[in-house]
Length: 456
Image (cartoon, rainbow, N blue to C red; front, top):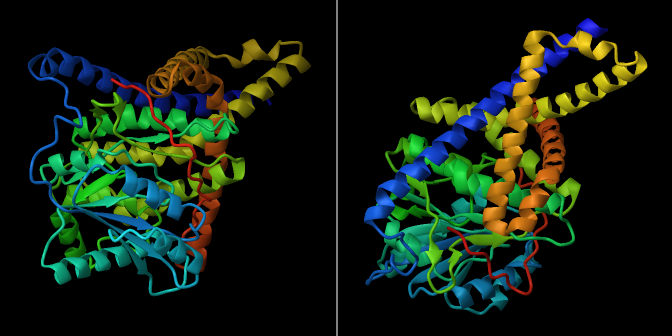
């Protein structure tokens, strides 16, 4: 029994150490890049703001919003967005389904001539990518009817709270950048500090550090599916190569794959973090994320299925070394989540075994190699929690930063449950051969509107 437990501990400890060192490498690159830019770029140039990026002659921008069963939020979202946006030339295309008349009616009720409702040809839900393709065709029809061309295509969802100046940022940076991703900042949910709250921690770290490192290493930058602008010409090239549709209707995570396709076509994507000088807040999209355990697991199951499993089959291993390294990081999420829970279980077994044998068994389990791995993992865990707390505090304030430390346990449990479900779901998809469907989460739109936080 002790030998088996020791071997299991060794395997899990080794796997966690490799994953932890991988995360540490990303931290080192981020801080080295930050220090270098402060000592070079920002000594010669002032940091850009949304105001400094504004220029004359803005180009027309299309905003596309896919919507299935969104009658409860889409009207408020569209009314809020059109009232907020400080930009003269944009049009919003909103997709709905023939068997969802309530959503179509909510879109029409907004009564803004800049909003065009688009009805998908098939009953819903299909996939989000299929709905986006319908919006693409409506966009092309509008261009043809008005003898014009949009400069950029912006992706948003039905629950997004947009920043007033986001379109000015896109206008300034497209087409120099083929894709511009603004940060996504989950809203604080007082009623769900642990479930909804763990999204604060993950997005704070991902959209402040991880995506920035991807760009710095020269890897493809994935779209988040919202707060993202794509060069209209680039999207047209992707559509032309894909039979007329820029998004693959069979894809579960079309936003993630979009970044890789842009890179394959020679385009460059970047996460752009600028502040609004008037408000001193980050120009970002804010939204509520799932507040219940089941909803969070369902959402993350879809993400893991699309990125770590279906994405592996669909994309393979494209690009150079940096791209392949990032693909490994994306796909390791499935295994890392399960390894973490295995580590919790083995730690409990060691304690129970030690108590049963009056702690004689615990020292016997610790070979020099295992002892060294456990100490390494302890140090990496402490560092990881420090990073998690620091990035969350930077974006959401010190109280949320402190909560991020115990909230890591909730995050690990949710991710492990999603990893388990993703493996079963993908197995079912392969066995049945059925096309995937839009397994969306129930959305909420905030009231009153948030103001955001200062950020560097």
